[in-house]
Amino acid sequence: MAVAAGATHRQAAARFGVSAASVSRWRRRKREQGDVRPKALGGDRRSKRIEAVKGLILSLREETPDMTRDEMRQALAERGHAFGFGTVQRFFKRHRMTRKKRLPTRPGSSAPTS
Image 1: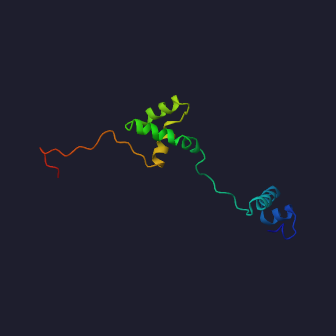
Image 2: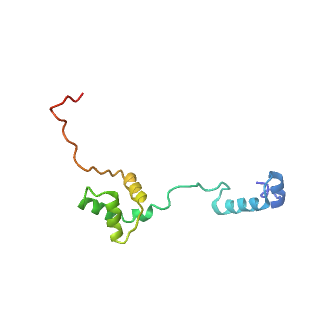
Image 3: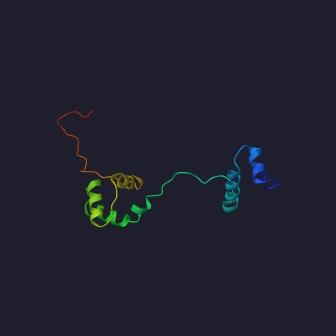
């Protein structure tokens, strides 16, 4: 970087067509993280709340296997854990948990199946 070679922040900013504040931020980022590139954006930052009650969710599912997602939300809320429908849905999807209302039935013998 130009500043490391002896240029001031303003000289480096003029050379690269950016503001002196940007040069200052890049230098601080280099000092703090060892690289001037920004950290990755996005990612999941909220699922840890529902993951903290995973044991409770699993026990509720074991007690009532055909519980709907809305019933699961209500059962969690009764125990002091309020979550939105989408949060519960993503939890089940993330853990590959599906719910079948009933077992599949055999095909009938009165009509052809193909």
